[in-house]
Image 1 (cartoon, rainbow, N blue to C red):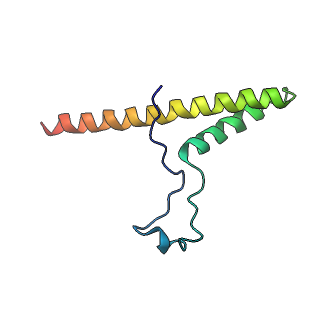
Image 2 (image 1 turned 90 degrees about the vertical axis):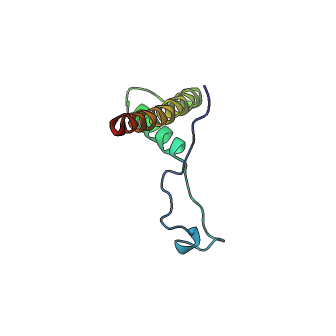
Length: 91
C-alpha cells in the first residue's frame, strides 16, 4: 500500500507558524496518522474483557496504524471523488 499524505492533526493557524509560537518552541505535535491510530487504540482498549499484555499491545498498535493508513488513503479518495464531481458539474 502506498503511503498517503500524513498532515498534522492540529495544524497551526496563520501563514507564518511563528505567529502562533516562536520557531524555537514550535512543535506541530502529532500527525493525522497518529491521531487516527490513537482513536483506534482507545477503541481496542475499551474492551474490558481483554487482559492487556505486551504482545496484545504490540498487535493492537500494529492494527491501529494499519487502520490509520486505510483511513488516510480513503480520505484522499474521498477528496478525489469530490473534485471529480465538481468538475463534472461545471462541464
